[in-house]
Length: 376
Ligand code: NAD
Ligand code: MG
Image (cartoon, rainbow, N blue to C red; front, side, top):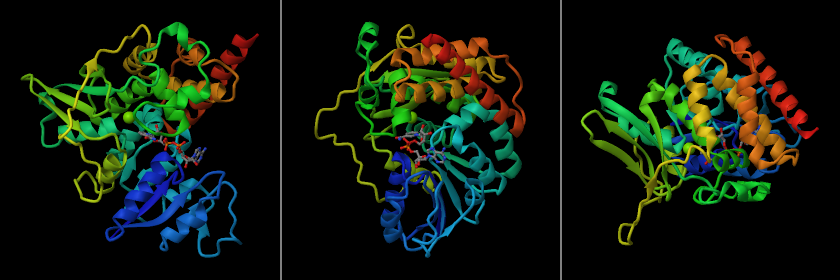
């Protein structure tokens, strides 16, 4: 039996992780979760998972739930004895518990990509020092992980990350002026949390994923490319030096990569996500129009420059997306805010925990001031 802690248990990835755990109840045991500011799902979760003992929530309610222990912090939760920590909190908010999990020598199934982008070198060094493994949950990176299994990394010509292109793939730039939050959140092939849905609409998500792949697989940016795959069936590909290409395919269902990560990179029964080849299956690939979707180009530039650039890319995007969701700025202005932040910030090394926290705070302030300035 493997004891599992799930950080961000009520989100899109978190709730699908709980589904995977309950389908595999003979092998996986949920022992701790984090919620955030909403406890409404807790009674149902406790009913389904009787062994659940530890909970972190922003506003704990110890009297109402005497059967659980409310821990004092996310870091404390992430450091409890267990066999695997699933990191499904959205954004840089996952950084401290992620560090805590790795320092406790826990293996991590990682859905969160923002932390890896913001602090990739720091986290990779920590992973190495503590001899733990990171199993990617992000579907593209799970696909790359599977394609690379058993291969010599030296024989890889490039990683090819697929992108659906988001809800506005075929729209003209002029049509994107008055995009509403609801339109931006409506993704054509995946049902995800609001932040990543907006990131998919701007293609910032693909930019983050390029940097995520760089840190996960330790390959230079020149060996990472992106292609649009309309149907979200081919989750990513690896091209080898001899021209041979391996791809991972499957229906767009996050339970597949989640389960694969929960079993430390092994295929297992219990999902019912099968591609039906009795029906015609069309797969369309096309290049990304970098002029329309500047986010991917910006991400490559930030990644290549290194230092604090990837971190600032992430922090400024988080602030811009939040402002858009609050009606403070237009959808079209999200990527320009990132671009301005990258240009305006003073690049520096982000080698330590405190550097990372400080530069993230500074980048957020800079992004807010840029948004405020634009409103004048
Ligand atoms: P979501 O918004 O649905 O869920 C986020 C979870 O984090 C919730 O449980 C929420 O309560 C918690 N949370 C939010 N802010 C918090 C804070 N400040 N402190 C503690 N907890 C907080 O998001 P999601 O779509 O499940 O995405 C989670 C992560 O997984 C993101 O980093 C995303 O990029 C990545 N991811 C998601 C998908 C997907 O299909 N949803 C696919 C690939 C990668
Ligand atoms: Mg993805």
